[in-house]
Length: 448
Image 1 (cartoon, rainbow, N blue to C red):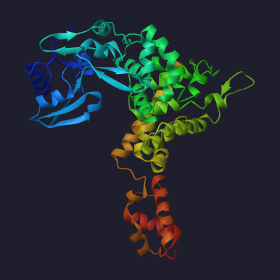
Image 2 (image 1 turned 45 degrees about the horizontal axis):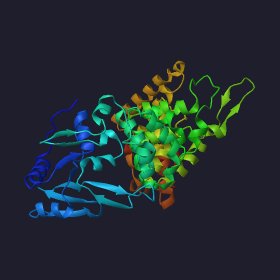
Image 3 (image 1 turned 90 degrees about the horizontal axis):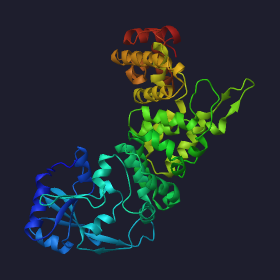
Image 4 (image 1 turned 180 degrees about the vertical axis):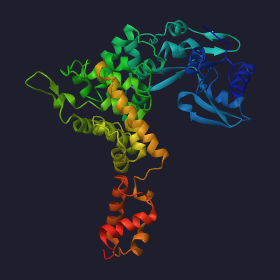
C-alpha cells in the first residue's frame, strides 16, 4: 500500500530546511492517510523535534505566526502558503475531556504519535525515512478498519469529540469501526456532554454526508440520540403499514443514504419522520397511521437544529422540507405554477430529491411513485424553460400600468396584481400587457 508522497513545493522546502538544520521533520496525520488512500490532502501538517523557538529561528527570514505556541504549533508562511509546524509532544491530563491541561515537549516521535486518536491518523512520513507506522495504521488502512491508538476508552476520555470523529471517519471513509473501539464509543458516549454544540454540529454535518451513513445511523442511534432523542425511539418501531418494509429508523437511514450528500437534504431526511412515534395510531384493520407526523417532526427538528446552533437559512430550509415531505405534488401545469408561486423555484428544487429519497425508502411495490415525481420534474423543467409566469414580478403589467387603467388607491394595486397573476397561472389570460389590461377592465371596470 505505501506510495511515494510528493508534497507541495512549500511543504518540501520546510521539511528540507529543518533537516538541513539538524532537526527531524515529518508529514503527519491526515495528509499521510489521504496520500495512502489516493486522495488529495486538504492540509499538510508537519511535526518536528525542533522546539517552537528553534523553528522560528530556522525560518527567521519568513513570516512565522504563533498560532498555537502554547501547544507547540507555529505557522510558517512560505510564498504566502501557511504551513503548520508542531513540536513532538505528549499531553498531560484532560480535566475537561476535550483539551490537554498541559503539554510536554518530547524528542520522541513515537510518544507524539501515541497520543493521537486513530491508527490511520498516527502515521508519519519524511523523504529520508519514508513511512513511520508504530501502531499498524497502514495495515488498518489496507483492511479498511478504524481503530483507536492504544486503549479506546482512554482516547475518548481524553477528548470526547473523538467519539463523533470516529463516526464521521467511518461514514466518510466507509471504514467499519473495530469492535473494541465501537464498544468504547457506546460505553463513553455520555462524555459528549463536554463537547460544544458548534463542534457537534460540524461533525454531525460531515458525518451525515458520508457514504457509510446508513450503517452509522443503524449502529449508533444511542450516541446520536444524545442530540436527537427521538432516534432511540425510532429504532425497532414497526410501522404496521403496507407502504413500509422497514422500521422507522431503518426507513430514515435508507432515506438519508440515498439522497445526495448535501447537508440540508440529509438533515431533512434525518428529521423527516422523527415525529412518527408520537403520532402513531392503528386502525381496526391493524394498519398503522401517523397523522400529523410531519408537523411534529418540524417541532423536533427546530428544537434540535437551534440547540446545535445551525444557521438560520439551514434551519429554514430543513423545516420547509420536513413539513412538506409527505405532501402530494401536482403533475399538471396549473398546479405546479401554483406551487412555484407559493414556494419559489429554489425550495421546489430542494423538495424534489426529498420526495425521491422518501419514496426509495418505501416498500418496493410503491416505487412506481417515482414516475409521478419524474412527471413533476419534467413539467417543472418545461415551465421554467418557458419562463412561465408564477410571480407578480413576472407579470407583463406593473402597478403604474394599473393606475393608468383606473386603479387609483395603493392597496387596490396589489389586489389587482394578485388577481391578474391568478388569472395567468390558471391560464385564463396570457401574460401579455395589452390582454391583461383589457381583461382587468372587462372584469373590474375602469372605476375601480
